Image 1 (tube, rainbow, N blue to C red):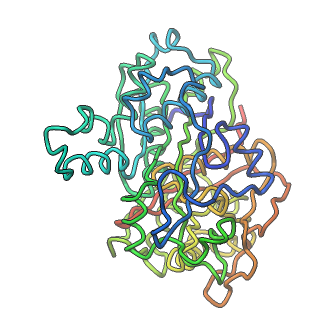
Image 2 (cartoon, one colour; image 1 turned 90 degrees about the horizontal axis):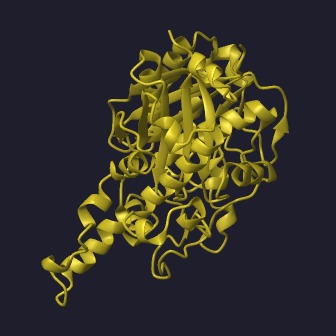
Length: 418
């Protein structure tokens, strides 16, 4: 089986508009959650989110004429892909002679475009004939990957996968298979999401999924595994990994961040929004990923949790880890970086995979912020690296994403050894 390595990274997140900014913020314990500024949320039950700040696609070489044709989630992917390709030393000219594809996860698509379109549609002064002309192509989920393919002239497969909050993770797993199979030698993969708008926040508020008790204290709103958690905080952004077949990467002298060792997926077949409380569904994804990577549970040092800060997820995921890792679960260092980035939905798995890779490279375990009163009585009784990151050798990591509909995905990265 062809070995697959990571040769480039890119990110746009609520805590930084590059990989370096984002990772430095993670190490500093910076929390990117604040009052919503993208729309007037003063009359909403939920008034906080983790927004990307000071974002302008012109900083990535895309002029305003072109960026105006893109939804926000597309702009994020273009930016993170541009950084990742540059980091990998891959230009449009170099990619022209490569077997290269794109595999992106997106859970929702252009909610901002949908909202704007419906406002026009129902406005008596506008009506159905006054919709913005690009409403359809801007709102559909595949347009983010399509724009990247057009900007960089990539004529290989350009696919988008939607499995709710597991989209980014499942996209990376599918990209791994694409490179392993020889369908491509290079794959741009990751996730993107942007649904901090009135419609998006309302949809998740009525589900009672979002934190609503911390409007006056946003920095403490995302508190995975803590007794006082009351929901997740909506985030946005994108992360991209450049995957490459090992011999191909070595032949062109590429730097190698880590080896993408394994992927596993499963379905709960249980409920449209709630995970299996006993954790058996998600545990299968972890076990399958370990088998795919030819690793044992005790080979993993760091586990980046889905850790949404909801009661159902955090206790169920703890059960999941105990089943999959057995006695080793007590030795794992686990953290939820959503305590800093919020929940980036389809982009969550991608940015958390990036954190796993940086953790390996820097020998650093990210913290779970706001873990002030660990909910041991509620079943959250493992070690979640509370409030301050830790140093230590990391040879292999696992990152898990769990999505509405019972979608579970796990990716495993390990230190590259030639």
